Image (tube, rainbow, N blue to C red; front, side, top):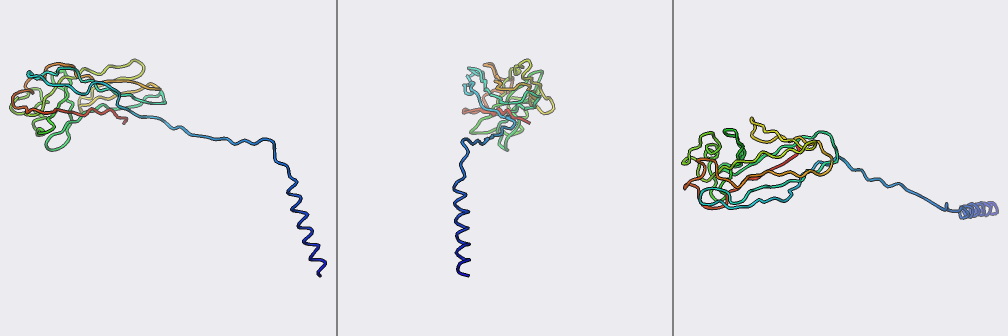
Length: 204
């Protein structure tokens, strides 16, 4: 019985020694993979976003906020260009259309206008005394880029529908020229201070 136990141990040692004799392969490889999905993003991209209003209500220099649209697909994609401004009761649409023009409303930051004042300023026949602290300015229609980007005004929602058909980076701007205010939206009832709106370009 003792002899048999020793033989078993000897066989185990022989097997272990055999594994040590296996030689490593001279080369090995592994494949690494990183998956890139669909890129659909928008970044702020330069442009003048600050100016002054002179004593006639005119902008002294244009406002032209810019955006960079980034996409790695060339198929049609929908975006929306909107704008908001702040009233005393919260955010309201800053874009409006009146008498064939598109306007953007700039509201006083320190003393926001009422939402009714914004509505009056955006109407076809604003009354100066009824829209203190909100001033409207005409917007230049955004420029289409043939084969890449096309804008269309949505009159029911008061915003721009944007159709992107370009793979890569696309630069676009909204221009508010240095011009006088919409009639009857600038007057002595408008308090001094900063007048602002937020322009937003977003994928749908």
